Each structure stands twice: as C-alpha cells, then as structure tokens.
Amino acid sequence: MDYTKLCPKCGGALVAISERTGGFSGTKAVAGAVVAGPVGVAAGALGKKLTTVQCQKCGYTMEISASKAQSAEAYGQIYGPLEELRRQIIQQSMSSPLDSAPNGLNGVKIKIHDSLQISLKADKMREKEREVIASELEQINSTEDERQPVQQEIDRLSSEKKAKEKQLKTLGLFKFSEKKEVQAAIEQLDAQMEPKVKELKEITDRLKMLRTDLADKCLRLACDAVDEYCVEIYRPYAKQLIAGLGSEPLTCSEINAKLSSSLTALQINSMLKDNPFITTTKKVKADKKEYSAYYLG
Image (cartoon, rainbow, N blue to C red; front, side, top):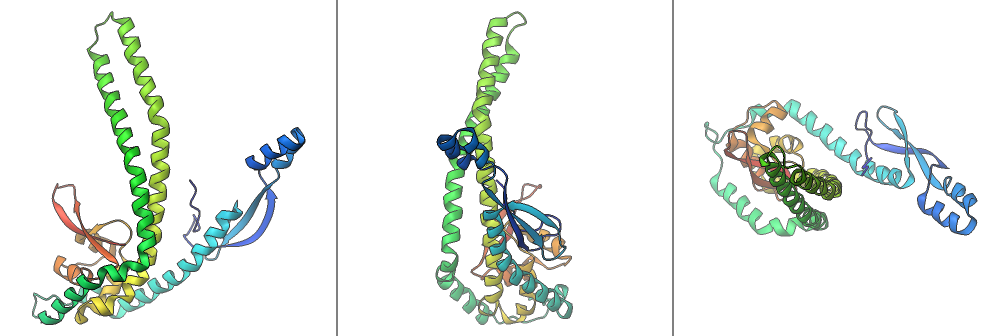
C-alpha cells in the first residue's frame, strides 16, 4: 500500500500543480469490454486521472493518482503548522537548552503540593482530554484487532512448517516416498503462508500510518497541555522534550541520544508523566531489563 503524503526526497509538503488522464483503469476497462469489446478495454486504459505534485521545500515533482494527491495536500495543511511549531521549539531551545533544566534532587525546590495537584488533575481529566483523539484511537484499536488473528495464523503455519522440516531431517536416506510427502506438505504450508504474510504487511503499514498521524496530532495537543499538566519550573523545557517524541516508545536513554541531552529519568518523567497526550509504557531493551518509555498518543 502506497502512503504518499510527503516528499520522498526531503520530507516537505506536496501540492498539486497539474493533472492529466492516463494510465490504466481496471474497472473502466472491464466495463468498457462489456459494452464495446476490445475498444472498450482500450478506453479503460485512458480512464485514470493522474496528478503531478511538487514539493514546496525542494521542488521535487512526481506523478501520483488524483486521490493520493488530494490526501497529500490535506496532510500538508496539517504538516505545515507542525513544522512551524517545531521551528518555534528549536528557537526556544537556544535560550533554554535542555541540559540547563533543573533537577529536583540538586538543590532546586519543587513544590510538592503543586506537583501533587497537577497529578491529581491529570488522573481525573485524562479521559476527558483525550476525547479529541477518540476516533483515531478507535481506528488504531480496530486495526490492531484485525492484525492479531492474521499474525496468529502465520505463527501456526510457521510452527507446522518447522515441525515438518524437522521431520524431514529425521527420515532415513532411502525413504523417498515419505520425504516426497513431507516436502509436499511444506510447500503447501508455504503457499498458505504467502497471502497471509502479504495481508499482515498491508495491515502493519496501515497501522504504522495511523499511529504516525495520531502522533502528529498529539504533538500540538501535548505542547498546548504543558501549562496545565507540567510543574512550572519544567515548562520552558517540556516542549523541547515533547518535540523529540513520536509514535514509537522511547526510553530516557533513547530520548537523550535523540536530543543530544543528558537529562535524568526523574527530569524526563516530571515533564511528561501527567500530559494527557503522552503515554507511558514499559520497553524491554537488549539487556532484557524493563525501562519506562514515552510516546505521543
């Protein structure tokens, strides 16, 4: 599935600059064949509208279907304000670098009462605040429910294939008929798995795009929520931290690596934990240990 929404060269927003009719339209070709035979098929080959889109940043042009061009332009209208928000955050980081953020354990007094009040408000209001992203969350959950049985079927077929391959290795040198039978079973399992793997990839791509779109929406919402759901002394730094998040969970060490900072886990948690548009989860890393991780959504 092709999700062409931004320039593949530089990631800039795309705008339509021209349109033509060309390519091949299978639906129109079939309809044309019924009405006018081979001539109708030829007409169907000319029935698809194609749009040339141009990157507003680098000028790169490409030709895509009219529906995808419309989707790309609509996404660009969202993407523009997000880029402006990121630019403002970068400017802010010059005057308030992340590494200058106060540490509550190093002589800077955080008012415990204020922090507790914010946390209590966040717990109470999280569900209400997140109503603005309810439809996106529902789509993601629905797609995840769609993905699960496909993955389970692939796992079952893969397990059966491994068992057959193990059986094949144990057969004696001259058991030709048995080997042929087992090999045929393996090939049949491969044939059953192939469309399932293709289906899983399509669902996974769709799920990734839905999560990316949600993260883009939550970037602005999370920044807007800083004044309500972040302790005052951390507010100048929280938006910079939020700008480094995305749709995939990042641990504290991964956030620091991405932002070239050296924040403590306490600092990061203090800035992010109560924001209703940021989710805290657990992530298992290569050392098999669980770490707190954060993502937009």
